Length: 312
Figure (cartoon, rainbow, N blue to C red):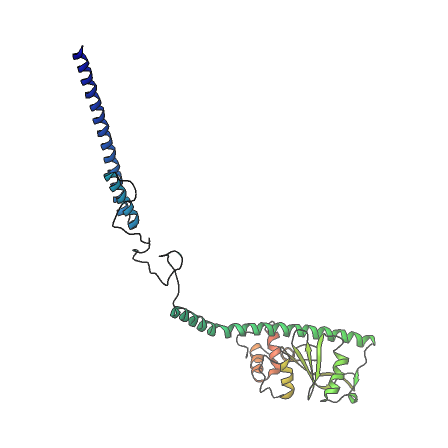
């Protein structure tokens, strides 16, 4: 009986030992498999050039697996920025938030060079742009003035035919009197065009239009028909009103360019001699270069456009 009990206990101990050994073998295999996987991961991370911090954490994990320790590993690696060891990274300036963050900035020399380049380009292009704008404004105002004056002359002719218009006699006005030029303007033009102000000057009358341009009236002369009637005057259009006052001071055109003052006929049209005499464009252009009287004719001949060869 005691022998049988002894044999049973012995068998039980042997079975328990085999179970413990098999469990230890299984744990060892699992640990080896995990260490191999982590090692392969570290190799892959190394091949992919991952940051030092991730490699340090991976190696610490292996040591914890091998030593069975718990908690943070003791390693010789220190925490660094992801950009600290990158060969193309340049840290400029200091950062108050987030140590190691990349900050992009320009140096003073770079800013000054850029501003200098912008200034040079502006100096080269601005005069051309300004001139194009001035040409556009001049043509627009010139065409508008011609249309307005022709319409006013047409309305005045209608009033003359209806008998509602009283013309001035030649003995009622003086050729170079500003007072008489004002009288002439008030009868022949003021009822038919819109103005903002009129001003008597030394030799004539300057009138300012609503768009900032101006008209200078000077020297009345006798109409062909009927005899003894004054119905015409010299008319000068100024795209900018101030040149009408300059023209009154100096009729020699010394301080006035060919785009500051334009001559008009009393009917509101540009001088039409080029049509009456069949002048070619080249002939009108040459006359404009020597006599400003023909410059408005040249612009009309070019289809209300100031072309590149215009003597600006």
